[in-house]
Image 1 (cartoon, helix red, strand yellow):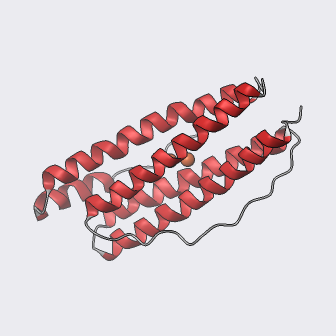
Image 2 (cartoon, rainbow, N blue to C red):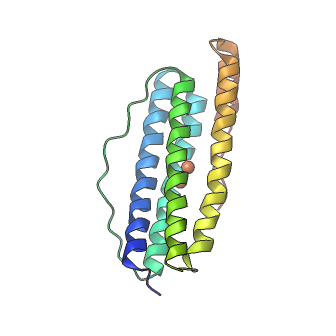
Length: 167
Ligand SMILES: [Fe+2]
Ligand SMILES: [Fe+2]
């Protein structure tokens, strides 16, 4: 059953946002790798792949609902600047933007009484809570490490051991 036009438009916007988010993480990965932090680069690349996978899930849901997909225009990703903590702060801000966007999608699905879209969106909202918490924890540890090289390298090694999630 088709989504109403307003909801379908919001789903399309979300596809675009997840793709832009994927590109932004790739830019952050490249920046961190340039700084010699290849472990954090690996973490950001996996993050980038996950955002791409999210975009594909929104795209598939839109197609499955028999709505049209039209990916929107995307600006160039922001150029990461400042300290490593600043880069992860930017990542957190981006996740918060995505959470807000999926929350309003959820509200729109509720007002349109689109009960088919609600469980799909609920899964993403739950995941956003986890993602924000994960990035927040990294930021806390970066603040603790401060300018201490060995602590930063230790955290870099740890983040570099991240593996893509199954499924
Ligand atoms: Fe996402
Ligand atoms: Fe995310």
